[in-house]
Every structure is written in C-alpha cells, then in structure tokens.
Image 1 (spheres, rainbow, N blue to C red):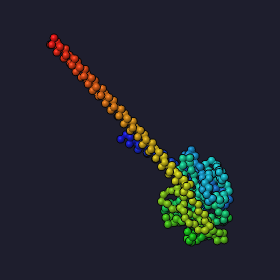
Image 2 (cartoon, rainbow, N blue to C red; image 1 turned 120 degrees about the vertical axis):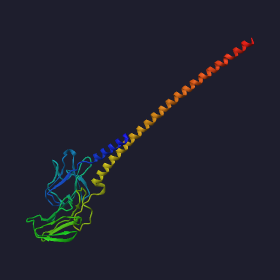
Image 3 (cartoon, one colour; image 1 turned 180 degrees about the vertical axis):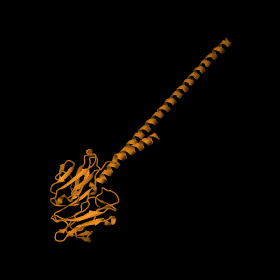
Image 4 (cartoon, one colour; image 1 turned 135 degrees about the vertical axis):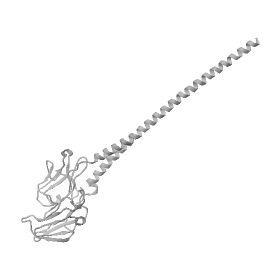
Length: 296
C-alpha cells in the first residue's frame, strides 16, 4: 500500500512538472497583414521573465530560425523588425528552454497597397469581430468590398465590417478590395470555443494568397507533448525499477533467513545423532566385560 502511494505521488509530480506557464505572443501593430516596409514589434509576455523565452518563426522558405539570426533585433523582451519584407511572412511563436510554446501568429507581408486588418489570434465563439480594409496611403476609410472564401459578403462605405456573434460557420479565408487601389491578400480567421495555441488549419487558399503552416516535424506543440509524455514515462520506469529492486532484496533476505534456520536444525539433528551413537558404543563396550567376568 505504501509503495502504491509513493508511485501515485511521483506520477502526479511528473504531471505537474509538465504544466508550465506559457508566454503570450503579442504583435504591434495588431494585424495579421502588414505592409512592406512597416515597423513590427513582437513580444513574448509572461509573469516569469526567467523562463528564457525565444521568438522563433517558420517562413514560406521553410526555414525555422530565431530572432537575431539574420532577422529582427532583440530589445529587452521584444523582437523588433524595423523594415519588414514579404519574405518575413510566416508563423511566429515563443519557445522556452523547457519546450513549451506560446500562441502562434501567422503574419502576411504584402508589397501591395491594400491590407485586411483581421484578428491575429483565434476569436471566441459569440464575440464580435471587426475587419478593416486599409490602404497604405490616406485616407484609409474608403468604400470596400469584403469576401469570404472567394464569395462577396457585402460592401461597406466606411471600409470596415463587423461580424456579430461569430460562430464556426464564420471560419474561412477573408479578403477585401478597394476600387482603384487593389485587393488585399487573404487571411484565415479561426473561431474557437476556447483559447487555443494551434495555428490556423490547413486550407486551399485562392490564387495570390499566402498560407504558411508548420511542418509536422517542426511543430512545437508536438515536441512539448512528447517531452511531457517522455518525462512521465521515465519517472514511472524509475519507480518500477526501485520497486523491483526492493522486491528482489526482500526475497534475498527471506531466502537467507530460511537457509540459516535450516542450518540450525541440521546442526541440532547431527548433534543428537552423534550423542546417540556414542551412547550405543558405550553400552556395546560394557557388555563383553560382564560376560567375561561370569565365565571366569
């Protein structure tokens, strides 16, 4: 019973060790689409600044690198990109030395004159979402047409559209168009019933859009889960090994104890047998003396 309690305690400790505080990746300006040449700042925010968070990205070229490794400049806990370019488009996330990650952000950098400002993170079911069709030049609040999955939703005179009480059916690829200025790239909007750190789902975007997803081999959530499961398995195996060693030692002690008891019994029996034989020999030797005396 005691050994079972120890096993359960260690198992719970190993599970708790996998539950670490995750950082929150923030982007300024808060938009999934960015104009070429703009300044962008990405930050890994968390209460425990000693976690050692590193900002990483996976671009459309397929390279996974960290801030300062050929792109961006580290300033305190932020990574600043002073002049962002289309090749900087990709998935960005925060990663610690222990492996846990933050939410993922899919950034699209365009050299065009129109962008669609949409939520960087997944939106909660039931919330209101505002989309803004913006030009690089002023004024930015020009009449715009909004599209979902290639189909026209509506036209707005002020250049922004609000989707009230979003649901799962509102998920999809959104873009906008401003007459005389051009069309924005497409961005995926994810609707969820809870906060999530998963990237946008893989889809088939229309021509001209940008879609970046992490390869399975580079997916940080998978690495985090595998690391957690691996640590739990190691702890369980160590506990089982300790229990096995204790069982073997206990059996060895029992065997030695039984052997010692058997040795004492054999010694006592041998002593009794020797005493009995000595007594018989003594009796046997005394009888001839009595017979000889009588004959004499």
